Length: 239
Image 1 (cartoon, one colour):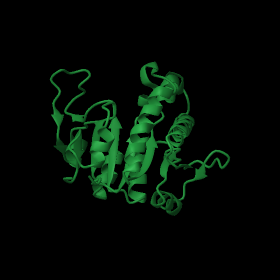
Image 2: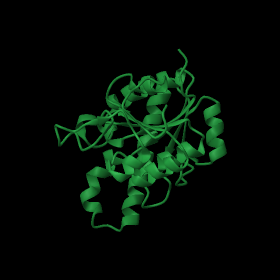
Image 3: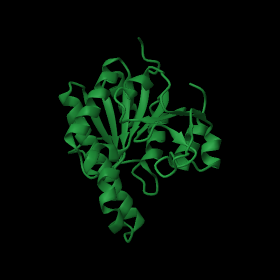
C-alpha cells in the first residue's frame, strides 16, 4: 500500500522522549520512536522532524520564570537541538540517513538551516531534523513546525502528542471531555482549544496547510497517519 503523503513535517513533543522519567532522554523511548519513524521513511515518505524541548526545559522552568524571556527562550531552543541529536543517533543506528539542521548556527554540531538544502536532503531520502526553533524568542516549536512545513512544501503538518486528538477541554482533568474528529482552524482559535499555539494554527490556516493531531504513544500511529488512515483529529481542510 502506497503512503498517502509523500512529504510530511512531523512535530514531536519533547516530553515523550523522556518516558517515565519526565526529564532528559530515555534511550529505550527514543529507540522505539526511531524504529517507527524508520518504517515510515523506508516506505518512501520524505520526513522532516521538529522536536520540542520540554523534556529538558520543563526541569528548569521554575528558575526560568525569573529570567529574561529572551534568555529563557534561547535555553529552550538549545534543548531542541539536544533532542535532535539524540534522535539522529537512534535513526542512524536503525539504518536511516539523517541530517540535523539548526536555525542557530553551530557548524561543529549540525548544518545551518538552508531551505533549498533541506529540500535536497529530503529528495535524497534523508530524514531532516530541524533544531533551534525559528532562532527567535517568543516563538514556540509549534510555530517552528508550521514554518518548516510550509517552507519545505510538506503536504501535512502532523503533531504527535501524548493525547489522541483535540478535545473541547483537557481530557486529563475533565472526564466528560469530547474529542473532535475534525475541527476548523477558526474553531480551534475561537475556542482556544490550546492544542497548538494560536500563531502556528493561524499560519497553517492562512496557507491552507492541513494539520493532524494524534497519539504518539500508540504503536504504528505514525505509519497509519502517513497512509491516510483516520487517526486523531484533523484540523483545517479535509484530508
